[in-house]
Amino acid sequence: MKVKITLISVLLALNLCSCKEGQTTTKTGIDFSESGLPDIGKDWSGEDLRKALASLKAIKKTDTFSLPRLKDEKTSVIFKKIMNSLPTVNTSDTTNIFDQFDNMEAFNKALPDLFVLYAGASEKENKFYSKEAIEILKRVIQESTNSSELFFNSYIGGQNKSIDITERTEKLNDGTFKVFNGSLNINDPSTKFHPIDKLSLAETISQNLKKVWKNLSNEQRTGLLKRVDYFSENSDSPEVRGVLKNLAEDLKKSK
Image (tube, rainbow, N blue to C red):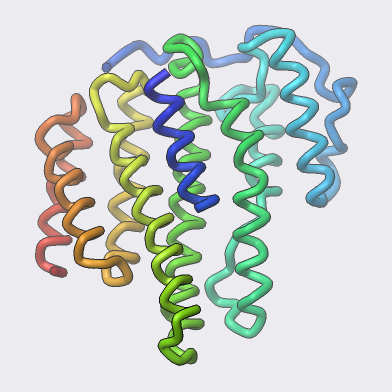
């Protein structure tokens, strides 16, 4: 349950142990083509994505361990289709900057149903969907980073320092802080994601936190650095500890 609370805290911000790898295929042989899932051979609209998530939600009520998996031979194409159909923020599209902000809003709206599917309410479920939950969280980090870079590099620079801009900056930075803080907490030994997935998450945190570091307030940087330092010493994965130790050194040089 702690894991699910941590993931939900990341979600709200936007609206804002070593174990065996386990089962690698879905538990049941469900025919997804008869479940109401849109045709994966075509481009999905926002409505198609909503239908797909609703379809999977209904399937999960029948069998918790029946959702598409990233590495499952038969269902990985479906999981990848869902992830590829999520709205994305294009930092290079500075001409249509408000369209990109709309994309971030649409991305945020799609997350609740996605987290409900893969966040898990039990240790067994968290282990089973470890890779998928981490992939979703990595995507959240990436989109949060893109939004921060677009806002500070292409939008705020051309605006007067008005009250409106100040409020938008504080709101965006608060969300960015909570995304990275919540993601770092996944490294707590009490969480039951697979070590290889925790390492992948740590690498994503490292790559992206350095990009937004200069955009955050001093208080937010201090808070995040404390968490990075803490898990560089207390993560149950030596590989994760190494990644976060290097990150802490880089961040301290940037202060």
